[in-house]
Length: 272
Image (cartoon, rainbow, N blue to C red; front, side):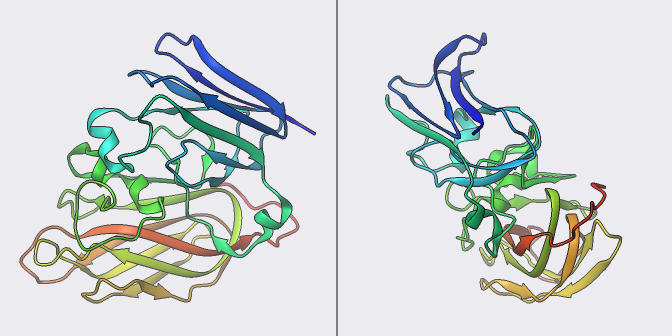
């Protein structure tokens, strides 16, 4: 048994409410959130898997925590429009944390999905980041590409968030797993708000083991699915993005799904 704790803290760090338990904690917070409030997660055992519900309007996230402490910034204003409009609102909130079950960890699943990813990552994986995000706006942040939402026929506020590249030719998107994983399939949901959008006809996926794959895509709202097998990798990068000759300057990535399992390698793989 290992202790876990979840707390809501105000701008000055004061505890508004918290709950602690053995392997599981449930926090019912019966007040409105204020600007500057944060949700704090504490775990006795790090480098372990946890299932966290950061808000009752969002799904649970199966995440790997490499640190014993992290905080989650409650979004307000422009930052909130990339989330379900029911999330973080009202005067009652249901938050939970528990140790993940072994069958959940070992399942073949989408290893990229993390609904509670944020730019200021603090040891919570998977985590997405990029060298550019259009105008720094939340609706074009890298985190949108791993939130599980695949609506790609429009752009802007929820549920049409995407990773936008601000017309930058050398745009790169990185997905970090935080530990070693084995994968065999990658699906890319490119944004398809035509004719507003352009699309990528070619890209390169590079991996932490030094290998890479050049992939071809077409103009489509359907997912681009690639059978790509890699073992013991800790991250992948989408780069060398070549867009089509369509007149729009706005290609974007709505979602990436990476299917596989935890690494079967008995030793350690370098976290490069």
